[in-house]
Image (cartoon, one colour):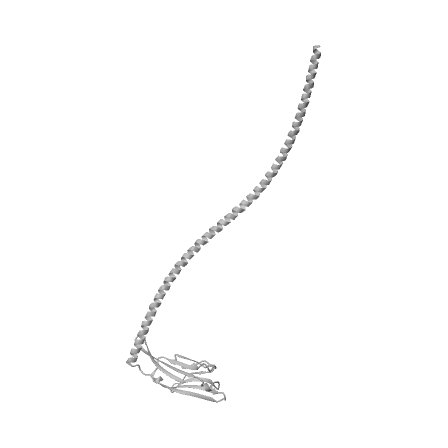
Length: 268
């Protein structure tokens, strides 16, 4: 099948500029009763004076004329999808009016080749005042819509900027907190290092004190042994003194007795 449409559009650029957009759309679809009996090989769009406008061969990209703004198409092996060839012009000239032919080359399962063709007549005409009014109304509606979208976008941008500002403040606050936390951690690390040094010093002092205590214990043991020895010597001296006293008493007693005897003898 083939279809054609002429749509007048306008754009404001240093004055009113009329743009005519024409779209030719050529499709090929196998009839249900011919499914799987034919194979599409190529699609063409031709102008009666200008020749081939665009074409596509199976398995190859679209080939288009130099004055086309866009041409696209695809030939599908799957018959459930419609193969197509589509071309688009802008700034049409009156010379581009005329007959357009949409052709499809197919190959039957028995090897026969066949060309299917349909014709479309297009006439490029100047727009009427009513057309221009409709276009201007359409453009004004689009401008109002675009203005609303711009205002919404500006508000969205403003909201995003405010959110970014808040997030930036939050980031600054978080950064300050992180710096403070890092300082606290550094201070804690220094305290831990100092404490470790103090613990090491205390361990060294403890070892020294243990050695001193050991020496004191040894000295105490020696003193205890000396005391025991002194006590033993004292007891020995006491015993010796007791014996001396006893011997002295005996001697004195004997001496007293001897004196008495001497006196008695002297008296006689």
